[in-house]
Image (cartoon, rainbow, N blue to C red; front, side):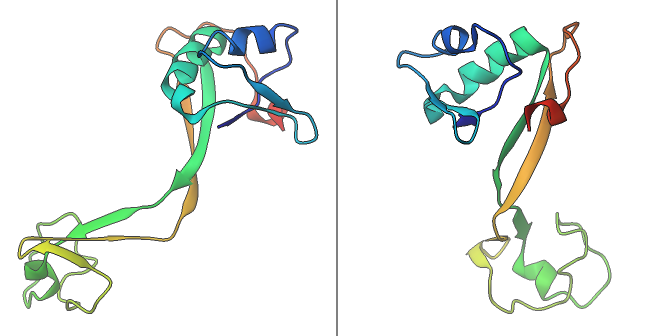
Length: 131
């Protein structure tokens, strides 16, 4: 996991309280490297310290549909595809779990979420400050 923080003299010391091993500074790219299994703990502590943070991570959208929808001839669609696959036919790319459920994954993308502490009264900083 790669982490960028607003500058503070105690960043290394603070990060080392998140988990049991120590963090590594990657100076040429200006980020901290933390073990992936620290993610939840890091997010909780960062929200306490900063009030908000951006999480940027790989993301693959999963579509859910059913053969009944894909092979439909009418206009009424009640599944999560919201009509996108309605009547289009079961033309491959779908993993059919059963007659009533099929799924497929899209290409990997990058997702960015702004997470804000519910009790956030911390000093304001901007994503651009970390780039």
